[in-house]
Length: 267
Image (cartoon, rainbow, N blue to C red; front, side, top):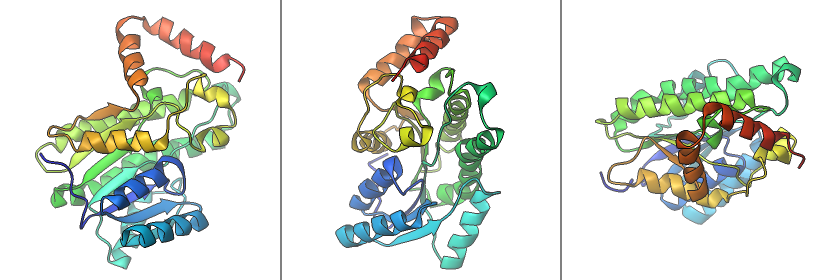
């Protein structure tokens, strides 16, 4: 395989109003891809769309949507069909976390977290993957997390959801290897986005240094450009080191206790 050519492609990006979603939009626009931007905050989407149209002379379509809705993949494909837009690449980036002991969490908020972080990723991947495989020249990127690599006390559901995303995406990588579609699970560590504003505490970062969204997205696109793209990539050298060390040098009990101490620490 050679590097991905995004010219003539149309990439759908969820959670595109801020953070990694907006950065994916900027970097893919710079590479020539037309875009479909999906998020709940239409005003932000419109501002980003205008910026990218002006700077890169591409087509950008905006869809205001809450991914916690029933069958988001079908809703998106129906709307795009009505607009005559054919998507060749997808970035499932939307997601959020709750923080605190599981037994104290609001059940409705947990339901929404599952809907956005787990159900929407699977549903949107299924809704588009056949046409992505048929196009045979695009990408499917599902954003997982370093939280996928171990249980996460006080963010139990978020870690479990991201483990699901990692496992699902790596399986789809194998299933799609001979189709021309490049499938990748991206696992960032703590990143400088609005994520912690939504969570409500910096304790969710576990005291780690925040990465730049620019660097995280560059890591993903560079992995996709490899001659033999991997099924998943961890953003950040130290994150990659920690993922290896926790698997090889510590017991499961030790890892869980260590993460628990980090998230229990005061900000």
